[in-house]
Length: 85
Image (cartoon, rainbow, N blue to C red):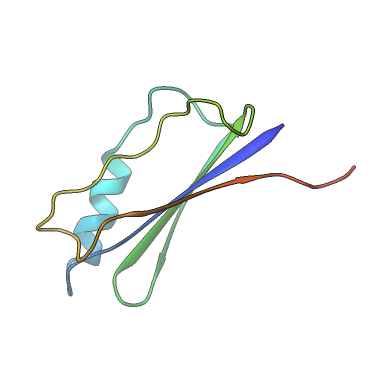
């Protein structure tokens, strides 16, 4: 099974570049199958990691950034792949 972890944060106005740099420096305690970092207007950063694991597996997630860097708590979601071959 493939599980995707999504992590999304919104930086304080004008600090999107700082948040993006912070995310790029973060390492997980394990190697995902794939990791993608995206950004969006309003200084938002999204990280998606894909893992070969069960849905409820204990997987490493990115931490919360410093409160002075973000406007709110990080949003997190977990999805399982339903693609059929």
